[in-house]
Image (cartoon, rainbow, N blue to C red; front, side, top):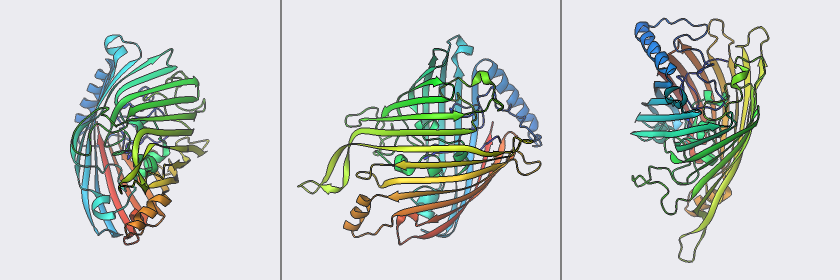
Length: 452
């Protein structure tokens, strides 16, 4: 499987790290991923090779003591070439700082992991200023700020059959997540808008996370059951304040059951397959997942009003989703050459949320270009569909709304050594923001990632 330096976003999902990270329960651990500076099939040719080799050596020494520290910078140049709100372009970027501590190796605390993730966001707003779409053409777009994105402790018990995590947590790092969909830059391929745009300021995902706990069990080798209970409102509030479990927040409960298929012939050692928790389960050849979410707080109804003219309040809001990701072709003589197919379907609460449902899917290709075994190519489509109550509410205000916004994406990820990846990306957005006044948009993104 190609090593992906530009990967899924937290959402709105965002690009995740290639350095040793705790981001995906379905990705390789540091024990199975290629060592930094030694990506298979590609030589280190950068002029700063001595610097990177020194850094890699330091990381290896720290890792031997149970400390993993990584720095990653995601940057992109954006241009809206036609349609949308207006033509033009801008630049945006994220600086990611991650620290993972294996407490067993560092201090003899079996099964414990500590994780800190600092995030610096800067630059323009492709969707807000140019395309005008609702789904988000760039999964790293967010208000400029420095913040703590995550900070938690995880404890695995009973031979890694049970895992508990507490703290500030990005649920999209494990829930509503697909390996193949992570290649794409549109936010909906990280987590569907019927969920990502629910609640107050969204659920606990990039760029606004909340605190709570996540629990997992693994009853069988290929089955993972997980549930998260989080503050219903992110730590950073719309008014600029910071609060935790304030009155009226309620809680957000998310649950998911996932089946992960990994043939015995895959590159991951059999002894690592039974681990659970963040960064536990390694790359897979197939995944099928069913999930659901529920807010316990009250929300404004989109159409019903009280006698005083204010929106009626509805107690509770929820939705469900189904995901699938499968390697549908793999060359028997060259396992790097493969094709994967993924699909997403999510149903939201149309009474209080704009999007009643979302569906998306795509194909990814890797290993088909000689001498470029780590590169990947993909094509995908995602469609967000307004609920009837939202359309009626718009009509009552004298505005029209089309039923759906559709995003088509073609992308190519080129990896250069262990520390640099470049990804040109083209997206065609049909019915941006479902607003008939906004023309279809054609957007180009050139993203790069530098990681150490």
